[in-house]
Length: 359
Ligand SMILES: *Cc1c(COP(=O)(O)O)cnc(C)c1O
Image (tube, rainbow, N blue to C red):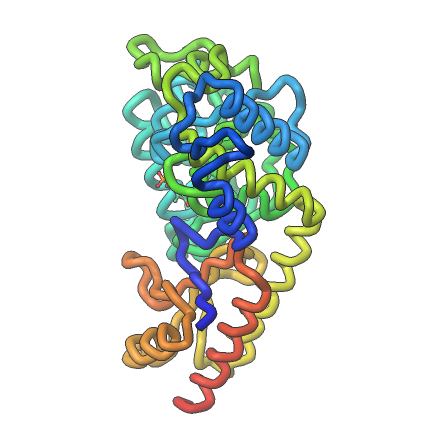
């Protein structure tokens, strides 16, 4: 049976990449070694890492005054590294609160300085993104932190606020899914396990001039400069994760880059939201239309007593990991780059059948 994995993360990876990794598992390019066994300072692995960085730079058109860092610790560690490194003597930073991940970033930043929440969507259960005209920005803020895609709430926005301070974006769940103009950001970070590769790798793209002035007491490993000065090889990097991410980048290039990914992602999202909206209220999506995520699609069944049956039947058809986040309930289908259109078609077809047989 073909299985489609709708997990929010760790998430589905492209089949082509897994097959290539399988083929190269015991003997990478005639080296006689698995990538897992290689010294990170050997020429084979140095080449793998350099190619991964070059391909990511090409895909996202990353300007030369930005550094690409391959780190560990997940996006959650960035919640601390960002304020530690980017406060740079300023009293506070601005944060937009659009949901669960914003909240975590905010509470961590409070350990290092003041936090000014420019706007919050808490008043309507985080089902929308507050209009920029309502934001209360501080022109002296060290930076502004946003979460362009809230993975749990399924809320996404693609516009950038018109501010003069550096913008920091947690793109863990939508990086590489749509074009971004990196030059408009001070720093972008993403845990790899949603839209890039395996868990254990975290990617940071940071403008050079923001590096090098961390709060006193910052551990060596949490200072961006340590990693920037050492090509992300100050200590042992997550080598296998970098290798797999590199294979994903190669595949994305082959498939036509980010513009091509976006086109497919729009088609997948439209299909799934139509299945929800066309169900005459059998399924409901709580998110305001214009802020609906293309990556994470939360929905509820009008009759929540059918949740268990829905999940059981979905599972039996190979439609896996549809249970919503414990804080939200209902269902959530994550449809990252690596989810094929056929997977979303299968889900939409099942949803239609299930609704008809339980209406
Ligand atoms: C998953 C996620 C995180 C946390 O990532 P970890 O790598 O588990 O620390 C943070 N922000 C967003 C938007 C996420 O989706």
